[in-house]
Figure 1: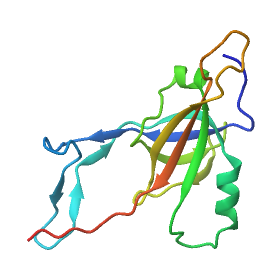
Figure 2 (figure 1 turned 90 degrees about the vertical axis):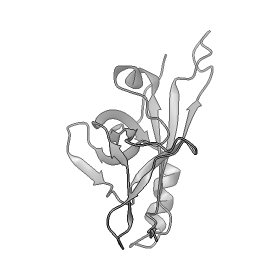
Figure 3 (figure 1 turned 180 degrees about the horizontal axis):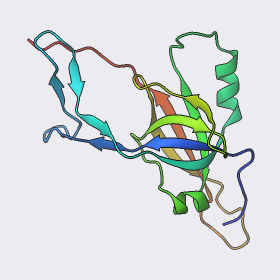
Length: 154
């Protein structure tokens, strides 16, 4: 695999770990926190890991031009190289992006949870860039915020 990332940063990713799963719908279960309180998700974060990535410029430029404050939708597209993913782990759909760091470990940006930025799409890119190589060497992962809904049990 050839190529490299341009201006890489470290992405800290927390894997999706459902503690309890609904057997009928195959989705994480929620349970009541109290009599009138909101429901609490049974999803927990696994041990975070850091992997080099490149931030896709079109997404960040659109966010920079957006008015400051609580944006209605936030999304971040990151590009990963397969060589770096072979050394670490591959982000999967449902994993949470907790922050971006410099290559020296300094915090560039932290993403609060909730709402959090969660991977909703992982798509391979750049087939056939090398001579005689027909496998993708880049992976584009789209992280999107999720709003936390309040649900009351009767």
